[in-house]
Amino acid sequence: MAQDAYVKDAELLSAFASDLRETESSLVSQVSQLSAVTYMKESDLRVYVNRIEDALSHAQARLEEAQYEYDFYLHHTDEEDFSTAYADSLRAEVEEAERLCHQIAEDLNDAQYTLDQAIFLLQGLRSNAEGFASRASQLAETAAANVDAAAFEITQYKMIR
Amino acid sequence: MLRTCIQQIGEEVNRLESRVAVVRESWNDQVSAHVEHSYIEALSSACHNFYSEAYQIETTLRQYEESLKQLADQY
Image (cartoon, each protein chain N blue to C red):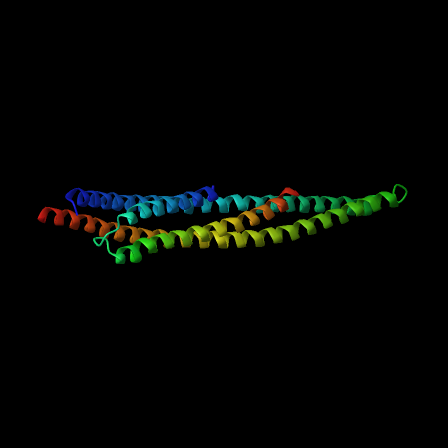
C-alpha cells in the first residue's frame, strides 16, 4: 500500500472515531432531553384528568345546591303556596345533577385509568432511555477507542516502513 | 415534543449508519471484524431497537392523549 493510502486510512479512521464520540455525545444529550420531555408529557396528561376532576367538583356542588333548593321548597313552603309542578321541576334538576355527577365520575375513572397506563409507558420509556444511553455510550466509546487504536497502528506501520 | 426527540434520535442513528457505511468502504485488517461486530453493529442495533420501541410507545401515548382530550373536552 502506498504511504498516501496509509495516511488516508489512518485519517479516515481517526475521523470515524471522532464521529463515534460525537454520536455518543449527541445520543446521551438527546436521551437526556427525551427523559425531561417525558416528565412534561406526564404533566400535560394530568391536566386533562384535573379538568375532569374540576368538572366533577362543580357538578357535585351543583347537586348539593339543587338538593338544598328542593328540600327547602318541600319543607319551608306553605301549603297554599305549594306547587307540585314546581317541586317536580326542582326534583328533576336534582336528578339531572345526579346523572351528571355519575357520568363525570365514570369518565374520571376512565381518564384516571388511561393516565395510569400512560404514566406506566412514560416510566418504561425513561427506564429504557437510561439503559440505552448507558449501553450506547459504552459501545460507542469502546468502538471509538478500538478505531483510534487501529488508526494509531496504521500510522506506526507507515513510520516503520 | 416527545416525537421530535425520538425523531432526532432516529436521525442520529441514520447519521451513524451513513458514517459506518463510508468507513466500511475502506475497512481493512487494521479494524477487525471483531470491532465492527462487537461494538459498531451492536451500537447500531441498540439505537434501532430503542428508536423503534420509543416510536411505538409514543404512538400509543398519542392514542391515550387523544382519549383523555376527548373525555376532558366534554366538560
